[in-house]
Image (cartoon, rainbow, N blue to C red; front, side, top):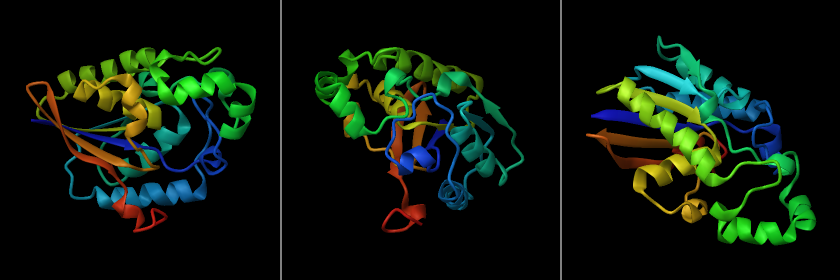
Length: 206
């Protein structure tokens, strides 16, 4: 059995301001660092053999905080980056809805059909991110791998594991420092933990 611990990064300034981040490299807030430390404590009973992260600083820094608890170095993989939100990056939902009202409607009803101007489609994101996960599983048989990534990216990986339609992605919640644990037997993934943030406290704030 190979175990995948899939985590989302801590809070950033743009998370706090409800701005679309995508592949813009936005730093963690102090709260984000605190969330990552709380998550590290939640994971202390796990035996982690390898740690990988998106090369965007918010995921990489989250992974490095977790790695302090183990003698494991963090390896960055650009394939684990967030979706490219194109011209939406840096905008709030309100600003996007005002400028692209028709596209926003489809984005929430049939997101797999949307290519944001200068951006990426869900299928393209899934190909690169889930492809990277499958390569890591092959590289680390019978080990535990921790991967730090992003909200939409994690949703695409989970859709891939479950064989779900990409249009159902918004039905999968992913909060900051969410912990997801998937056990793989002969390549088949069984989701054991999904969007666990109990380390942040009852209200999710820590």
